[in-house]
Length: 183
Image (cartoon, rainbow, N blue to C red; front, side, top):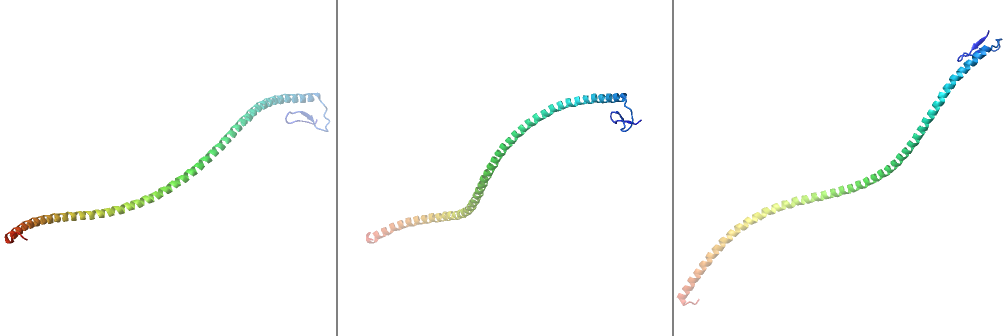
C-alpha cells in the first residue's frame, strides 16, 4: 500500500498512480482534522479580528492625537514666526541703540580730549599764577621797603620844613634887625 500524510495536519493521502483503495474512514478522519483545524483557525481569526478592532481604535486614537499634535505644532510654528518677527525687531533696536552708544562714546572721547586740553591749560595757568604770585610777593616786599623809606624821607622832609620855618623866622628876624624888615 502506498500512501503518505501531510506534514501539518497529518491528513491521509494516497500516492498518485498507486492503486490504493478509497476508504471512507480515511476520508472522514481527514475531514475531522480539517474541521478541528478550521475551528482552531476560526478562534484565532476571531482573536485577530477583535485585535484588529482594538488596534483600529488605538490607531484612530493615534490619528486623533496626530491631528491634535499637528494643530499644536502649527500653533507653535505660528508663535515661532511671531517671536522671530519680534526678535528681528529687537535686533533692529539693538543695532540702533548700539549706533547711538557708539555716537555717545565718540562724543565722550571728544569731551575727554577737550577736558585734557583744559587740564593742560589749567596747569599752565597755575604755573604762571605761581610765578606771578612770587613776583607780587617780591613787589609787596619792595613796596614795604619803599614805604618805609618814604616814611623816613617824609619825616626828614618834615624836619627840614620845620628847620626851614625856623630858619625863615630867624632870617626874617635878622632882616628886620638889619634893614628894618625889607627883604
